[in-house]
Amino acid sequence: MKKELHEANRLSWNAATVAHNSHKGDQAAFFRADGSTLFPEETALLGDVKGLALLHLQCNAGQDTLSIARLGAKVTGVDISDEAVAFATRLSAQSGIPARFERSDVYDYFRDAGARGERYDIVFCSYGTLCWLSDISAWARGVAQLLEPGGRFVFIDFHPYAMVFDETWQFHYDYFNDAPVPEAGVGDYVVQSGDGLVRDDYEPGVQDFRNPNPSFEFAWGVGEVITALAEAGLAVERFDEYPYANGWKPFEGMRDIGGKRMAPPESMPRIPLMYSLVARRPKAP
Image 1 (cartoon, helix red, strand yellow):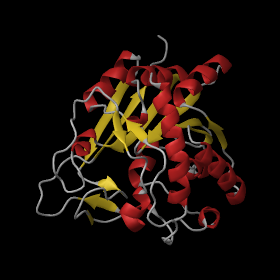
Image 2 (cartoon, one colour; image 1 turned 90 degrees about the vertical axis):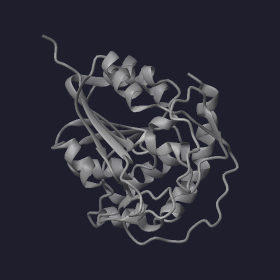
Image 3 (tube, helix red, strand yellow; image 1 turned 180 degrees about the vertical axis):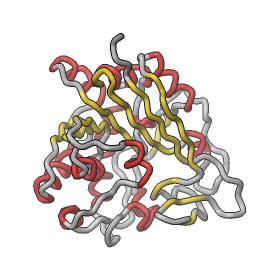
Image 4 (cartoon, one colour; image 1 turned 180 degrees about the horizontal axis):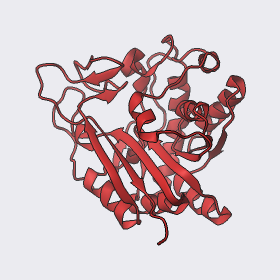
């Protein structure tokens, strides 16, 4: 693991999270009015969570975590960013939706939670998460360790194939890339996507955001992800690909095809922009 790069990413996310939330208005009021930030894909993959213990890894500022808690799960959210966890904790209190949040590097959380004997019925993570992980095998082992026998890992993310393009749809990044990719810093993708990632009224918020802290991303192909989960002892039960990206408009000409599902221009062939999977920890024979 490259913990020094994780630390750089923590600082970068601290700065970016302030900018992201500046566009989202009164989020506590949104949740008090029964708002939810989940897309139909997540709710379908999660199924009935009422009364279940659920761990949300890399939960960012907690909006999806609280949306899941509203469905009746007992949720714990974990994120590396101090700013994100502080915001999530305030949002939980102000919205009246109970949840527990912990600031931790995900790998440290696996170690500490394992030592405490924590186990969950569901481990969940979504959207822009794997690209911040420097060791996919250690991550998969940590997920498996924290699942109850029979428990499920539920995952949805943007497809790594889409990550080979720059914003003009030109091939730019290597799909098979073993080295960390240095970036200028976590950007303001909320501005980039306009109201695609804002469920209530979009606000201008922070303008012309430039992150003062660089960031580092990691490329994990679909095969590497599935293999890591299988080697960790999880049985993949479902794998799906989608020709759209929920809420996110990273490329030129993307259009809303309904429900804030963003697709390439009509002139382009359809390509996978998201994928999801469900994997289960087998019960002891």
